[in-house]
Length: 352
Image (cartoon, rainbow, N blue to C red; front, top):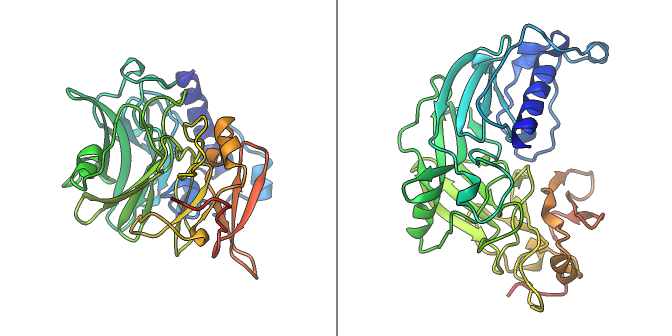
């Protein structure tokens, strides 16, 4: 199933980026992160993609691109070299010519993790799942890869040079080792990383959840790396087990604060909320929010936990209005939660 999905995504990539004569050009502007911006709005414009051209979209038979492994992460576009950056579940990263699909460079991040090495899941093997992000000034693309090592599965963060694909100085960073230096524990095998990475003001934010099947001792987490020093500087996590950050677009940034959503925690009769089924507002320090203005969870969060009805199946999206800045979160319960970004509202149960 993973390989079929990868082929479909590659076909869609070919169609969208090379159709109707807009190929290279979506061109004048790079797409350096998921949906084009840290707020994840997707509100960017391809000037040459007009209504007239959209009506005649077709497959460009002159574009031929092949990659090794399934593609779950959104490909990025780097305008200075007119290249598409693609990362796969086999831990290969490619820069492809946006006109022809020819490989400009390819890099292996190491052996991917086979499904048999994990407590559960549905991606086999598992390598890069979350969408990378690009630092335009440094000309580095940052990726999180699941790597099979002699010590078992390890979550590693890489920085690659955009012109060459070579490893940038100081990378990769082992996430578990970085957290251990802060006296924080991290269990690699049950932690899954499928959400997009976010680059803001010299820091990289990497969200974590679990795997398909919701197994093992994992927590919803956001790990922060300081790019200048190539080190893990902090992390936020749910207090109760699980409560993963599953949303594909990852951490959203509205220019002031970071926002992450969480899913269901493991519980049967527990009645104390500990971060699950929530929208959490974080500062760059990733400190645990204690004020009701900095989190929202529905009053029926316990029932959502028991029913595996994640509020955090998708990420929250900032919306600017003339009166109050809003935040929209969509839950698996079928509800849309429209929140005040300046005061998320808490719930009837305070963070312990």
